[in-house]
Length: 88
Image 1 (cartoon, rainbow, N blue to C red):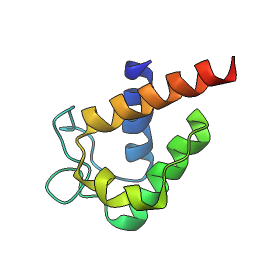
Image 2: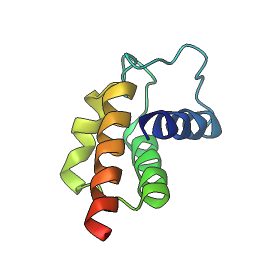
Image 3: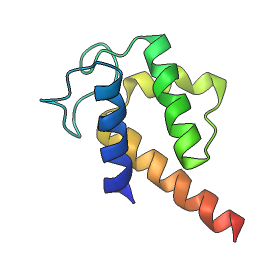
């Protein structure tokens, strides 16, 4: 599941016109890495929410900007797995 989420996140970053050539699990989403600004981070969050039927809290945006790609994909995969088990 995590690999699927990671591939989706990288695909979405590329679709948003970010250079993903050197992006790895240790690359931060915020200023010192991918350099997503708040609007782009919100766009990525919405895309992930739509794809994996998740909801991020409004106050999570700052926390997301500090995460690495690896941390973000792990969190999404864990939440998606939890959402699936809750639905059963």
